[in-house]
Amino acid sequence: MTYIRILHQARVLGADSDGTISQSTELFLSTRLKIPSLPLDFKSGRTSVLGSTALGAVFVRFLLGKPEVQDSDALRTAIDQALALGRTSTLRGHEMGVDEVLYGRTGLLWALLQIDKADGEGQTRWEDDESLSTKKSILDISRVGIPKLCGVITQAGRDGATDFVKQHGSEDAMPLMWSWIDTFYSLGLMHGITGVLSVLLSNNLTRFHPKLLDEHGKEIAGTITGLCNIAMKSNGHLPMAVPRWPSEKARESSLVQICHGAPGLLILLAIAGLNEPFARRFYEPLWVEALHVASRKVWEQGILSKGGGLCHGIAGNAWALLMLHDTFEHALIPMECIGACREGVKKDLVKCGRLSGDWFLEMALAMLLECRNTRPFGDSEKYRLPDNPYSLFEGLAGTVCAWAEAALAIKAKLRKMEFEEKGIMSPSSTKAKEDLEILEARLGFPGIAVSIV
Image 1 (cartoon, rainbow, N blue to C red):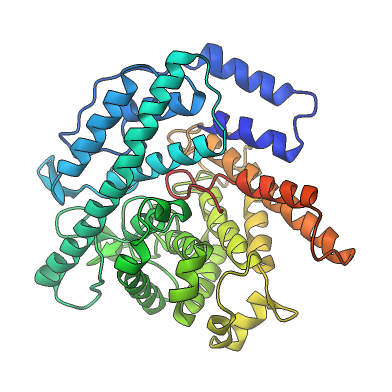
Image 2: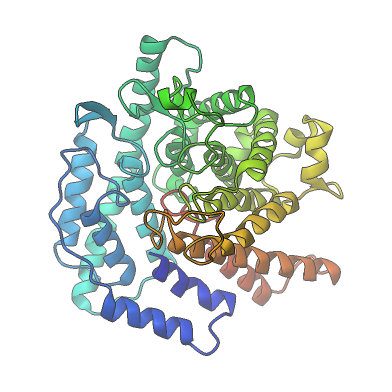
């Protein structure tokens, strides 16, 4: 996936004038990448492309424009199995939730949204008529499956909230809650509530579910408010789960990482702000207060000895701040939300009477620069080598994705500053097209965000 992303982004960044990146990437993808065709097994309830090698292969082949004939049947089977699942599935003696991003139905929903967007933006090149035929079948299956998956995931959230109150009472209960392990409900991005909500707030989901915000907007907003209340009670940290996960009670400090911790809440609040119809209707001053407090925690405690990866590394934490920069830079959050906040919040988030993402960008870039010292890219003794040092979520591949996203954000920021200095309020159609191209090249956090537009 990293190679596919970089191939798409290098051209927009102007970083491939001699064709070296595209040639080497194309060579790797065409001659060295062997994507297996494996049997599907959903007995564990794991239907996400991120946690299934077989489904992941179907997804990557589509993005490469090289689907195999059986891929459409495999995808249809995955969607049918996901829709047939109950709220939990038994695995190794535990009742496991089936809706998280990393292993569950939300990860599958994200992939279907990504497939649709990649086709709409022409990111994928098709090699022959057979591939085109398979492509059409996969797109049809995906577009039918998206609203159905959205429906079962939201209903599972309602049922989970009801069960939580029966199991634990009303304290920390929220309108939408998804089970994680047994009677624990994860709050983190990859395994819990913040991740599920982030995908449900994807900008292009409303095209398939036009009444999403009317039917579920209040529930989603109420759940975000519940998460923010929990974070504020925890001084900006987001616990692993409610009730508290046993090992967390014995920890000296809270986890500050994407899969469990405050960075997941920041990404959710960023995506909620980038979804303009949702932000205009539901964004609250409490959310702004929470993201400000949580951002400080990520800045103060987010340089992790685990290294530079996405899931539990520095790059993932930095990406959360980068996404908040996008939200405030595009000024989609109502100003009255900021006006109701403390003066310290307004000082950091408002410049010259307008929302500004500079505070977040400064922290994000500093953290991403520090990733250069982590292994395997650097050799600082401060950081240990990740278990999978070159992988997307633990290793260098994910860090490279974060660097590329930051480079695009910087390019957009410099163009904006140039226009402002020249007093250009309405760029020409050519320059406006170039700006849109930069935005569309922002592909978002893997597994969570489809893009920032």
